[in-house]
Length: 342
Image (tube, rainbow, N blue to C red; front, side, top):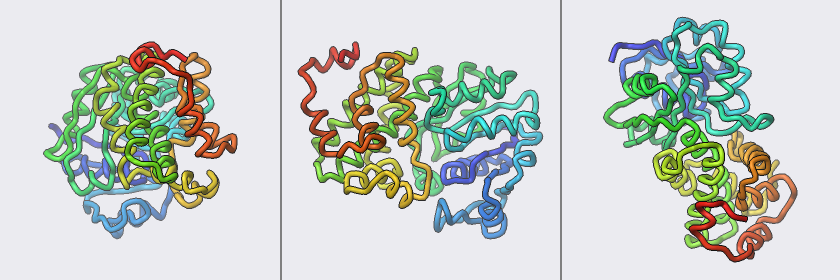
């Protein structure tokens, strides 16, 4: 593939990891970080110790704290930001983007106030680029990607040619990329899995075993699919990489910050204490809020999300939340999965 000029917006672990993938493929990459200290460390030491400690980064990776400089004259702009920051950064970047730029995001969450998906947010702020927006998702911890551990993801766009171009941009011998037409399903799966990962961590923190976590993951997948289908996603999407794949890795991995946050909650720490200890964005927290509101608006039954919302924001004790989940009324598994009955 012809060498491209790419801006990666977000100097955290995932943004930095994706920048290394792009450089491995021979592209020219500018990594934008809000924190000047992060940009300077990448440029001078070729390290990002705050987010990927102990990892040597490519010497050709250039970082900057100037958004305008990062996006100017770029062929592709990749948003790898906390979901609540995307709109503001897109608005600031908009005047400096090339007319024919491709925009992709790898943010996993919903905008809290509007409950909109991130591609919808980008479409509102970049209305001339709605056909050139894509989403990257799948089971992909940054800590493993930078070490070139085999990883497989999907790129979804309403425009097949955009998805195929991004597939070629990113695919390497260690980073396999599939294309996908279901933008809604890919975004919903990637976002809601963080809620279930909080629950899995909470279950482990309470000392429950594998049976409980397996049930939580399985019923969580059904819950994700119900909301996704109510938003016009395709059911089969949730059986793929951005659905069950991302769900499993996020609920079981030591790299998962959502699992770690849930684990601390299960051990008795308050939400405030957990977030202070994490010192990183835990997307599942605000996603729980957004999904709770969205489910209420769409009339979708999401019992796990509802109980986690009560634990996070209403002071409910984790053990009581588990008890209430276990004592719900009798129902048929397949009927509940397909129809979403209450």
